Image 1: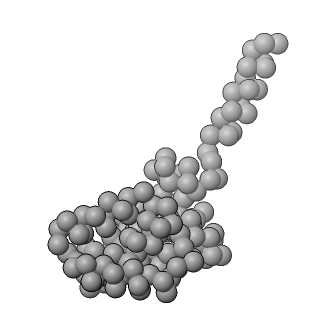
Image 2: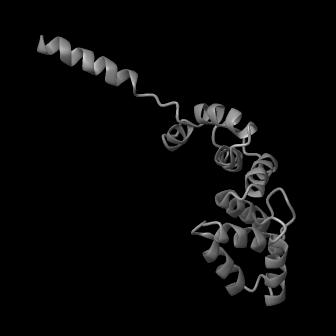
Length: 151
């Protein structure tokens, strides 16, 4: 009797092994399946899903690397005030990926990301200042521009 119960428990547990949570699948490296699950959520306006769609395209995980598509997804989530997407968009502007490098725009997105809780954005802003990528008046201009996107 005990062995039958053990077998039943193992069958139940083994059936629970594959998650339908796209974040868990992403973390497990199951990028194609995660992408398929993120896609309808992102198209429905979910900012977390939009950011993950951008990450898939940015890094080429489960999809061919495509900075233009990454930027489009990051913009959707960033426009909704999603801090991680704002940070990711700032990286793209700083590095000139799918856009002409624009340090004022990068700083603006990092400023918003920092304001909305992204822990890495302040370091990135500090680094831009330390590396003399921007003058103080340009930083102030970026902060002024951020008011257009502030939610």
